[in-house]
Amino acid sequence: MRALLAPSMLADAIWEIDLESLRSDGVRGLILDLDNTLVDWNRNEVRPKVRQWLHAARGLGMQGSLVSNAIRGSRVKKIGAELDLLVVTWALKPLPWGFRRAMALMGTEPASTCAIGDQVFTDMLGANLVGIRTVLLAPLSPRESPHTRLIRLIERPLRRRWASPVGQ
Image 1 (cartoon, rainbow, N blue to C red):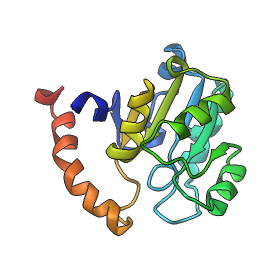
Image 2: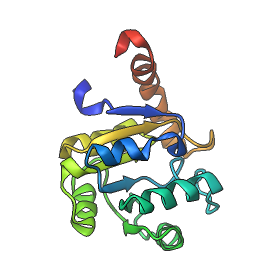
Image 3: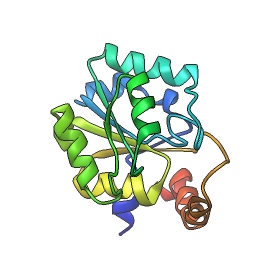
């Protein structure tokens, strides 16, 4: 079970991910979470560093898809359009459906796709179930939904293990 939860990489923020390295590893598609990955939880404002990183990814020929569990998704679609990202709403993460849908939209396969998010039990588990490389980020903001705060209690020991040299 631990292998299904473990990320391929850890990063403090999306703008710290080395795009050149991903590109040289064959990554052509990026599956991106929204809240606390691209924007602070439940906010619409995109930080300039996130915009710059996404612009650089496009410059390297990478396509991006925003994958969210939001049911109606109007906020997700608005931000996706603003950032020129494909959008999959009601993804039901960690189920594989949303990840597969994003890859179909981008025309990528698991080997050429990287999923980036801040949650172990949705973003990492779902991507790992499909065989996609993963990057686990620290949340952008301490603000989160009540249920996410509870899940973070379970995540915390895993994150500590993965961050320590002994756990790698």
